[in-house]
Image (cartoon, rainbow, N blue to C red; front, side, top):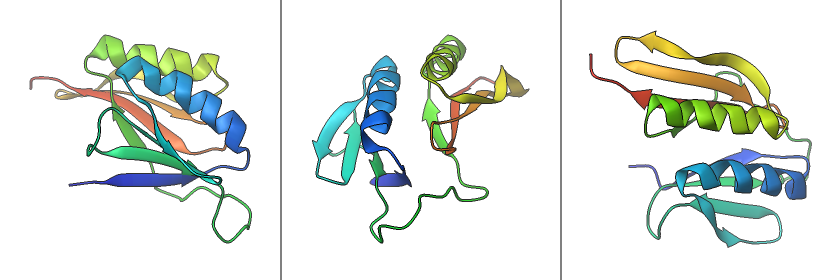
Length: 124
C-alpha cells in the first residue's frame, strides 16, 4: 500500500550515515540516490524510506504528529534498533516496552528531530 515515505534532513551526509547503519539491522540498504534524496529499502518494489534536502531549499522541519514506524521483527529486534539509533546520536522518545497487549514499541528522534518508532506486533 505504501510505496515510500520521505523525511527531510538538514545534513544529508550525516543522515545517510545514520540511516545506513540503522536500517542495516533490518536488512535495509540504500537502493537509489540522487543529489538531494536517498531511498532505503530491502528489495526492489518494496516500501522505501527516503531522506532528502527539502525541494524548496528552505529549512527542514518535522511534522507534528508525523512518525515513521519500522518493524523490528521481534521485541528484541525493536530493542536493537532503539539501541543502535541512540548510539548513532538519536534521542529517546520512549524507551522500549509493551505498550498494549498486542504492541511492543520504542521511540526515538533522529538527528533532525524526525520521530521514529521501532515496533513488533505481539499476540493479544
